[in-house]
Each structure stands twice: as C-alpha cells, then as structure tokens.
Image 1 (cartoon, rainbow, N blue to C red):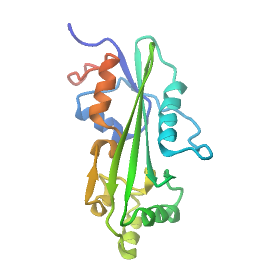
Image 2 (tube, rainbow, N blue to C red; image 1 turned 90 degrees about the vertical axis):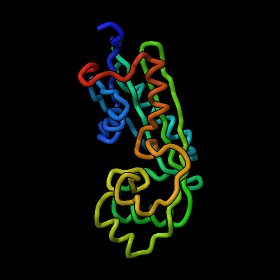
Image 3 (cartoon, one colour; image 1 turned 45 degrees about the vertical axis):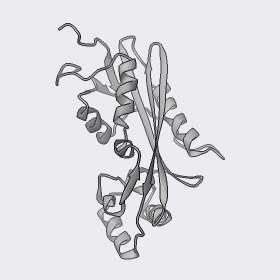
Image 4 (cartoon, rainbow, N blue to C red; image 1 turned 90 degrees about the horizontal axis):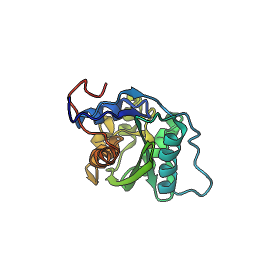
Length: 200
C-alpha cells in the first residue's frame, strides 16, 4: 500500500513496558533485539552522562541492516549525584526507597535511534516527589516484590504509585519511554505509526 514505510523498527530492549508504550502510539517493532552491554557506571560519572552512554552503547552494540532502524533506551534514577540503578536485593531496594522518601528525585531516560545514516539521541528529565514512607508501608511494598528489576527500586505504574503525589515532566518517560520524544526521533528516521500488522 502506498505510504507505508519500508523500514523495519528493531526494539533494542526486552522490556515489556517499552513494547506496551510503543503500541500506545501505534508503533509495533518488527523484532526485539536486546543489547548485552556492561551497565556499570564509570567512576565520577554523573547520571546524565551515564544514561546517555547506556542508550548509545546499546544502539552501537546491535547490528543494523540497511532497511532497519534500531531504538534503544535507558532509564535511571538520580538522587543528588547518586545513581540508583536496579537494586540487587531487598536490602538495597529498601535503602533506595528510604533515600527517596520525603524528597524529590530525578528520573532520566535517554533515547538512541540508529540507522544506516547514524545515531539520533535525546535525553528526557522528569522530577518526581515521594511522600514520606513509614517503615510498615515500606515493608509491605518490599513484600510485593515490585522493586525487582526496576531502576531506583520502583515502577510508577506499580505499587509505588501510592507514594508519589507529584511529578513534573513525562510520565511515560518514568515508565521507560518518553512517547512524544520517541515518536519525533522515529519519524526523523522514517518510522511512523501504522495499522496493526503493517510493521510486522
């Protein structure tokens, strides 16, 4: 059909949240191709530089065919100069939540879109405030297990939403993919919303 883009979108992520977010704006990747990279922050690396580097290195780690466009992203949480990645265990998740309790933090999501012409990048910053969390509420939250595999030890669309009265910025970026910015970057690479099945 005339007007249907011939480029194939590859999502460089195994995140079901990012896949769901893309579907909200009518974009369905042709394939998922997670990148395997070392996600250890460099010494003295600030959160903005770190999250940009992660998104770019994921994009660079993947092979891209001439007709393919790769989308990668990385999300991290920052409190002051401290980067809060995915907690390794319950105790670390508890420490992250106590650190954010009663104060504001930043959620940084970096995007990278790579095709045969190069890489396009964007960084989106969202401010999030958590209300004070008492120990009983924290223990109940940790028991749910929603902290596992989440930057900062929480997902705004999960149980931790009960602790978040205010955000400034992109809600979808906190979930894992800023939709407005993602749509713009993909459009610049020739990827547009399409009817279900058209991008498969």
